[in-house]
Image 1: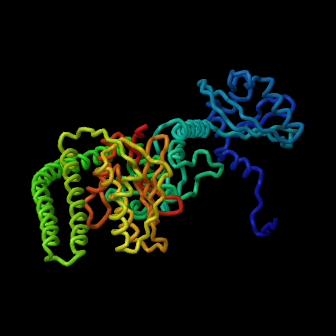
Image 2: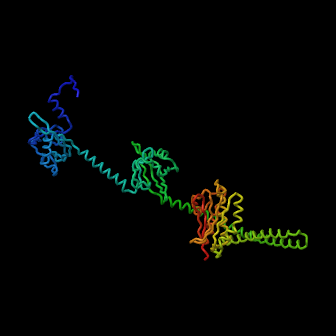
Image 3: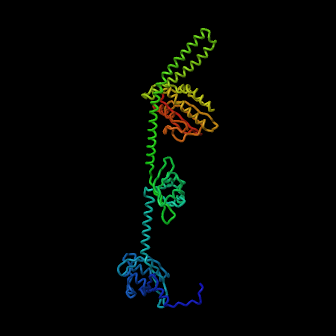
Length: 497
């Protein structure tokens, strides 16, 4: 240490003046007897005794009566300072008025002119201990909030990184079992943040907190979780407090009610369509019958002309083929109209045994005609044995056409190189089954739940009617993503065996 030679030298009275001015309490004890020799004003003020009154006092007069502050312990503490040079202890003094004062006390051996002594320097730590107790209590409150509450709470910084989260909040994000602590992770890495105006970014949501804004957090998963609450910008710190509550049950209920409302609207349209179908069936029945009569008349007239020699030989055969084909189509149209009238009328189940292989065979001409127009190949794999089921044959064929046309349209709208649909029949545990697979873009949701189309010009009636036809016949119908890409539509009907 460098000493300034020009600095004035301190004298003994200067050190006494400094000791008297110090706010640190000082007691001087005799090293041998431990009697108090002197006290500075700060010590006298704290203990409420003057120096003359302090000198005859012993430890039991000016210390707490608790066992750990017994006179013997006090003397041993001072003796340790005499022998080792210094000793530290937490000591509870008792003032003249009886107030117990916790202190942090340091005893130091000093050599005075009259002999060795022990200087005890102590300070009141009552306020510090009270603050420490309050901090421990606050810590316990925070711990209880973090671990024992159902409230979802996050403390986030301005970048949206997690700085604190309750156990419930971590469980909702799927982080409760992680070995890596969540502190520092971005909330948006695990969930979608939505503001008051819909989907938004964390930056926009944080900017809207002036100081509070509504917020919604959506956690993806098998069962998505929806949390709602508020985001508050905290004062004087670069942090945000997000308090949320799980509203997943309510949101799912709202979605279910919305779906039910759409189904009700659809059923209203479906009922109107039923009335229209009844009218069409009624109006078409008579013209179709008349057309059949006219065709029969043409057939008879052709035979008459041929027998009279007015028609070239062989022409009658060609006419017969054309007329027979037209007659078959009129018969099919009549059967469809009749079945449609029955379906939208009393909805009575018609017990009829049909072979799904035969039903597919009847539909193949129309399926291949539709597929050829857009360059799609139709691959058919029929069961080696008859697939006998109980169903209404014509309407079941209509379902096959609907599913096949749907697959063909999907292939026509995709850019895949494998432009092919696969039509398969088989017998399963649940009954006779028909599946139609395509190699298109694949389905994202169950269209039979929504009962609506995604096609630009579609009405959704085809798949919806297919669902109604199959379920009415005690069967099941489904759709699912196809392994390897594309979609798989299928239905099963009760076996006739």
